[in-house]
Length: 183
Image (cartoon, rainbow, N blue to C red; front, side, top):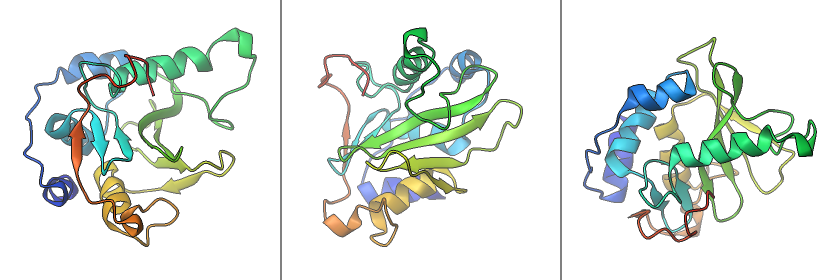
């Protein structure tokens, strides 16, 4: 229901991207939310309302979900940073463990993650933070409902962008604006 609402809100024609979910989820060693998979297949990676950077599949890699996760994990596990994590007090999800996986961010430094626990498949609370990186907000709703509320609900504080009247568009992530570097 929520995926369809996002599609209708943006006026997007679903792409029907074929995805090898077994390979992606095999690398993660955990399933991903079903509605995120629908969004991924419908949109790929790109930008909603000129400000929300949705990670899906992007051949240019700038909006590619797995590229971003691998980069986040690599930094989080790099011993030269000690035990410090960019997502403290959490960690980036490592296969088979518990941690955060980013699926969207904004031009205002908002970041949206799932808290994934491989021992609790099917539970995907969303943890979000704004530019105030010490304050985490938890949402027990689906990925597509959260995305819809960010785009359409001006009262969805502190993350709703409808109040800024940016429109509800989607632009595919082709063109590699970051020269292939993860966001």
